[in-house]
Length: 302
Image (tube, rainbow, N blue to C red; front, side, top):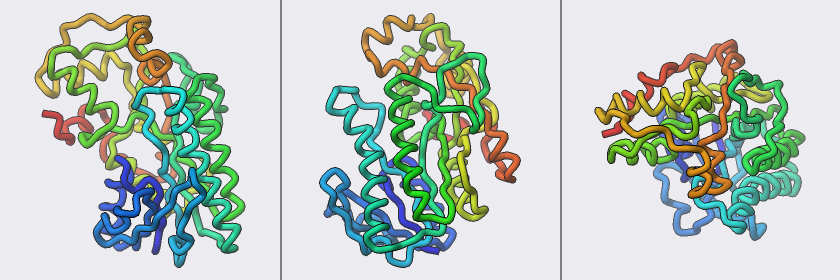
């Protein structure tokens, strides 16, 4: 089977490609840098630049599945320019794929697209299921809403469309966890606010396995891509400290202090999402890392 991957150079994309090559998939990928077209061994790279409307249509030849992971990182400072980039990198990439499929009159067997749990309203009490609306009015909520709407437009060009609402991705190769571990190693780790906000997470390996599983089992619709054991930020910080032998001494950092330093971006840390993965479990998917302790033991944190 041949797949086309956007966002191939990102944290998820790199890990996913290794797993798919091992299983015999043929892979095409898009890159915005022409000098990286041949950068991934045993894969075929194609140039695109959605913001300029540039795309190599040969990338679609023989492709049956699209895995759509493109999107600028949300961890960088949210200047007005960069906030637009966060949205445009998701929306314009979907739009150029839509227009391309129209131009070449091509229909895919399936599309799997990344999304995020940040579209759900922050709450310490509610357990979110896929049927719950994306009602967050924050910037992240706006991003997810526009992101999913642009992806929904692609459904007309595919037999199946799957959206994976992804939680905190646990990896030792980047992302929020890597930054947090640095602070804890230097004795500066502590929870934020009251620390009771819920963190719904997934190990990078489980996420990539879920993407492959969703293709092989013909998923269709929305699925929460999180483990079934969320934990509070207080608990998360303490478990990481214990794993790397760095006890947590500092008191929690007040939310207003965090907002003073990070501004609107503080919602990445202060928002609370307790999200259910019952739907993917009932579909037959089995997590390798369903408990946070097991997940971080697998990572190279020291």
